[in-house]
Image 1 (cartoon, helix red, strand yellow):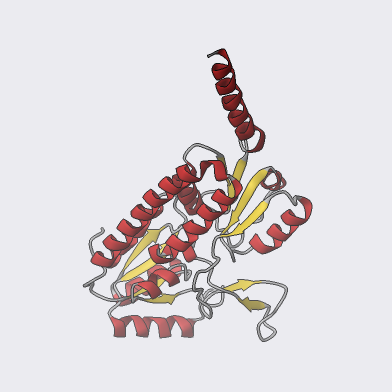
Image 2 (cartoon, helix red, strand yellow):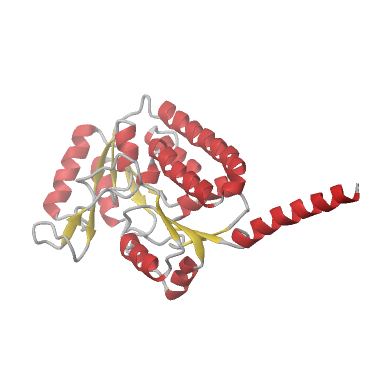
Length: 294
């Protein structure tokens, strides 16, 4: 009997020791708040999660601080969105100086959209204008792509911490149910709407538009404010297509959106595709398009 208890004590001590030696106290890092939403739903309170881009700041122009880079260096895994502004350059620097940090591209396997999104960059210029045509990075803004996005996180976690595979699996399945529920609600809301077209200041809803048969028209063109001629053309298109909704993301100027809305008799709505409560914001956007949100 005594040997039985000694064996049991040894087994428990070995198990706990393995867990604390390799995983406990580790940090995980993400680029934006919607990623933290997905990741926290998978890991619960098992890890501290560090978000690089502060709430209310555009990730496309953000430059991480030295303190933020230090936190990245302390992370077990850095989950990057995939193609947001600084990510690739900083991820390369991170990999060089912190080879033990695993870097995961959450956009892996997603059918990416090209041709609508521009970032200012010094390499690979497009027609000598100092712009490179890159994949649209806003892959989290559609439930259909969010499933793949989240699964990339889940797979990386299981590979890193296989002892908790079942825990992660159950949490991930619950997250998928939440994503599917969001998909169903959005599909139902957008089934019969006044107009399938909308205007947005910065083209952040391309994946939502593609996956739910919508048409997105951007006020910002190639990362710049529109010219008077471009504004007129957009107003003409809006009148032709009966557009009633103009979106402006938090942190962007309302002026051009207000001018267009006034000309076409539409309403301007502030939205936040970078909100932590991803499902609530996606449903709110669909409700606005369906004319069910004031």
